Length: 232
Picture 1 (tube, rainbow, N blue to C red):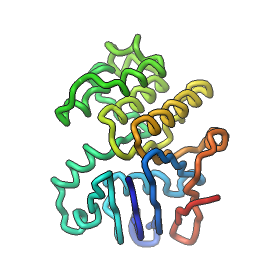
Picture 2 (picture 1 turned 90 degrees about the horizontal axis):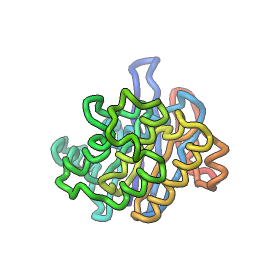
Picture 3 (picture 1 turned 60 degrees about the vertical axis):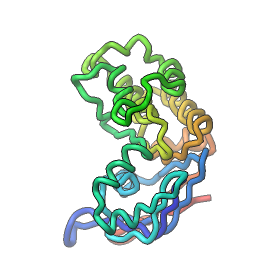
Picture 4 (picture 1 turned 90 degrees about the vertical axis):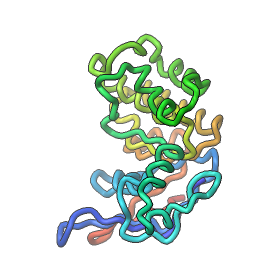
């Protein structure tokens, strides 16, 4: 589902620049990995690069989805339209800010990715996620009427609504109480298994990561650079 080799992305310029490196990663269908490390080490930067929101300085290999799309070739050729189409179809995002559109109801926010891709509005995966996260009473409300935690739960459902091949979640439980954080983790793992997705979850919640026994991509900090590698 996802194979990356030789990824390096740089944030900032001159002496203030910081590089984030991922030498190798392979995610198969049904696998969920946690991305861990101290605050500010580059976890979000790594996720944005994998999510095609940042152009890497170097990239030896990036294959995405069941059809093994050659993302590295598309990036090298600056094929922006093809990259945008691939990103919207194959990737699902949960941003720290939630990223809900304020003028759309909860229902329409959740269904937006499906409508943009021309998919049927009904989805068993969406129905299951809405029920599991107790969002049914909120479907007709606007985002400003929700708590921060409720918005984050909606954002998580929207990210899987179009059943992408790879889910990228940046601190999906940060705004949730312990009960809802655990329920969200359980739901994400269930949906990944049921839909055959792969997922990378940035998390500061070590207890949750350990409770669910997730394999980890851990940050190793060096001078001006953070390297992420599998930890066992």
